[in-house]
Each structure stands twice: as structure tokens, then as C-alpha cells.
Image (cartoon, rainbow, N blue to C red):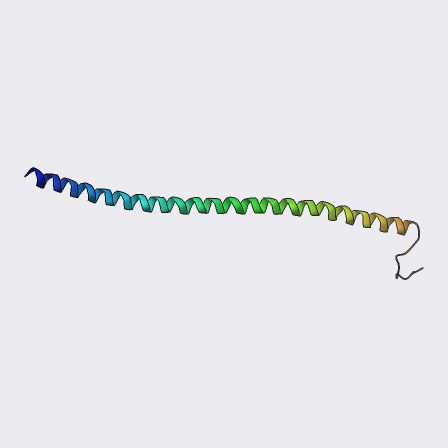
Amino acid sequence: MSSITSSLSNLVSSFLDILKSIFLTFYSALETVFATASSLLHSIADLFSGLVGFILGNIVIIGFLVAAFVGYSAYQQKQGRNKKGALKTS
């Protein structure tokens, strides 16, 4: 009788171990999915951070060039000179 009880105990223990391993497998897979999604979102945030920095850096340079052009044009008009190809109206 003791061997039957021991066998049933081992059977129940094995069945519970199988259920535990299935649960841990699904938990691990779900954890991997969330870790991958988190890593992806972090990478996208870093990408946009770099992109915004690049655009802002270029806006400063373009703004400086536009300001220099406007200043040069104003200086040329003050001196009474027209741009090449422009017709004098007076």
C-alpha cells in the first residue's frame, strides 16, 4: 500500500511540476515581449532625441545664413546698388 501511495504522490508531484514549468514558460515569454517592447520604445526615443538635436542644430545654421543674406541685401539697398538682373525703377 505504501508503494501505491508513493506512486500517486510522485504522479501528482510530476503533474504539478509540469503545470509549473508551463506557467513559467508563458511568464518568461511574456516578460521577453515586454522587455523587447520597452527596448524598442527606448530606441525610438533616442532616435527622436538625436533627430531633434540635428534639426535644431541645422536651424541655427540656416537661420544664421538667412540673417546674413538679409543683412547683406539691406546693406546693398542702402548703398544704392541693385542685385544682378534687377531693373532700376527710378
